[in-house]
Length: 142
Image 1 (cartoon, rainbow, N blue to C red):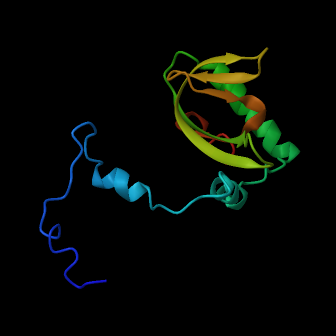
Image 2: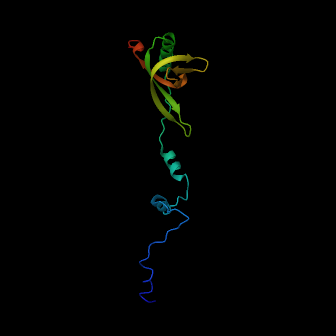
Image 3: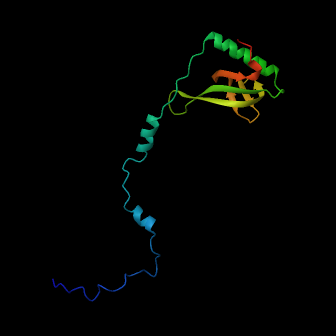
């Protein structure tokens, strides 16, 4: 092959289609992205590694205290008493769950459904409550 065989086209402009717009650099780069043969594998690994808490079993003494506190809350609904409730939320995907703490004012106690309804519409199942704190309980158990 002659070393000057492309001299006639080497300096010509790059051909551009009149029918199709140029591909963006982002789309062009995506053509060379690594191929994920196991779709969802990374998500499954992360889900397995995600930690959950085990639900703690409450003593009879703690359960009695919580029942007393719930009765006090029920008797004081409408007095705008701010409380803080720590409760267990079971995980949807694996055993265990997480403990959450929510602060606010109880709007209603639904004894049939066994849940507290806060003014901000947060619903807390009473059987999942582990700690209730608030000014209304100061001195009650000291």
